[in-house]
Length: 359
Image 1 (cartoon, rainbow, N blue to C red):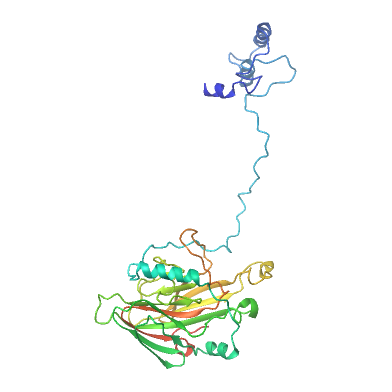
Image 2 (cartoon, rainbow, N blue to C red; image 1 turned 30 degrees about the horizontal axis):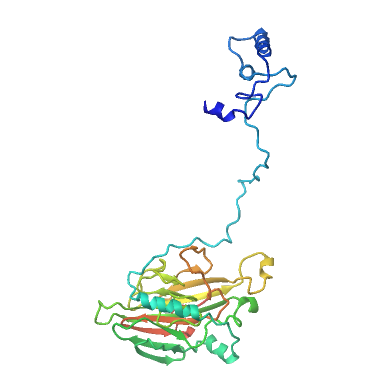
């Protein structure tokens, strides 16, 4: 009954349509059908369709019962046998945690940092002096001690530093005195060469005599300005790997993403970034630098051995991730060492002091 009801009144010559024939014409039609010889006792499908359709005296056969096709274009054809090349697409996003299992930062510190960053946009890159560029090239970099740092910090040799903090020290972020990456002088769009930056940190002590005291450090990179009472990776324009939970943080003020296992006393870890012209069609490379984007990757080492990495331009979650502003090769980037609690460490910016050696 549902079919008959849906067709009612929509097709004049089909079921449910208005009868334009008189009773005599209808009887004549059935008489004509009954007079045809039958090869079997049952009518064929076409004959049953005709006998149930109240046909008219037309020389043209009637169409089978159906809805009239809407007067619209069919959807475009897609050849599902053709597999698109996805090699240039970014990898899928990693899962993000809402909190870190060992984080000790207060919500008020986080709120203050967010407001601080909103009021201070990232500074534009600058063209370094040749002497500055050479100092970074040879690892002659200083660590700047922020106001929040509670402890000792000293340079043992050019580019090689030792530091220690006191128990229950608050979060602090030590930044290099010069950018390790100069966005103008080092950009592969300008030099036509791949560029990498790197430094290492060795953990000499974590927690001291009080193992209950939450203590750890992080190593990463930051674009300026950066709130130095926050660990690197937590705020805009920064990334880092945190030793306490082994997670990576990229502009991530929550709990980071899984990356490696926690780092312990006696281990040396290194963090580097590479900047290169992207693998893409030639016309893409002709775009201006402010439109085109570099291929930027992060790599991590553990005791001198490569131990994973990720692409800055991996696919991001629209709701959870805050983007990669400041980290895409368009801004100067400084080395960063974050500390909290009681820690002792060494930081090496010169290749002569690294366990890992580039090819």
